[in-house]
Image 1: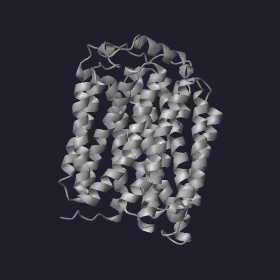
Image 2: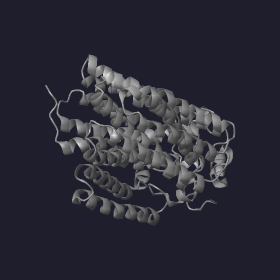
Image 3: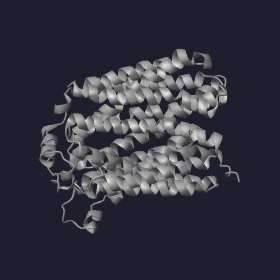
Length: 475
């Protein structure tokens, strides 16, 4: 029984649906992680992914599959902040913490590419529902593993005696709704612009409204008590947080467009099989993983975080600048392979330095919020990157030979070079130079040391100290 066909508009919006739901729940899940037990927040998220992946395997209706993917996005959003929260509290030494976060990121990078290859194998040799069945099997295994292996830990942002109802009242529901509206309108505007152009009302109206809702969100966050805010204003006062948040846009702004751009080119224009396409993406997984481990190694040498970040941008810009010259299948090994290898290595270093920098500059009691903010920036950049580059590609293709020629894709790649170069310049100008151990300001260090005087698994369940969100930091 074939899956029902979807309209062109729905097909263009569908890939962003998971991202929208991920971001909407992710921003609030950071607060949930800090208030409730992060182990069970993670387990519940993985369980949602498992159950609805299993259900999706039996569905043959395209619209229903999109709805199920959106629910999976909700589950996935619960896992990221809670996982990083657990890592931050299990590994208190800055070097060990950097390695743990890098390994966490490496698994994500490997999962992106290996998932593409494994899915291709299932589709080619068995059938597409096994893509969902396999996801369900893995997610159920993760649920069992986390329930058994991860030690218990009490929430860090609430007193031990606080009731569940009191914790629920501290969730910023209205703020989450305003933030959700902003993301939905913004992504819909970008998607509509790629379909109808920036002159259409469907592109302009949502974009204008999203600006006002974003302003309303920050006003609301400043108005309510910081202990209740989904994104407490105090976070922006910590050293380097503003620039590191901006840098968080970079990794997925690059990765988001790269996969669809080359997938379509290799399968449709070059006539490569799905498996061949997945194999040619391996440089991103292998080199990206190497970069994720190289960054914490450089941090262990006590090099300033700023210098490591700029090194990552240098690799990223250099590698991406090679890609526009690989305009045929014959030039893959000469330009595309080294370009993807060098750029992916740099992207991973930028990812690690932004992630570690944000967590190092803020108290561990708000690590869930920081992790949620970081992932929201990544996912928003990925969706925005796809929409922006689609608009660039289609506009160039309309003037230069259509979708079967490389000119539109070359324009996209040069845009990525320019974007990475701009962010590199901003890093040089605005990011302060400090070594990893001194990257965080004194308040964050004091909070971290007072909450974590010694590092053992047994003490992971001890009662943590709460963070005082009323006193400003010395930025």
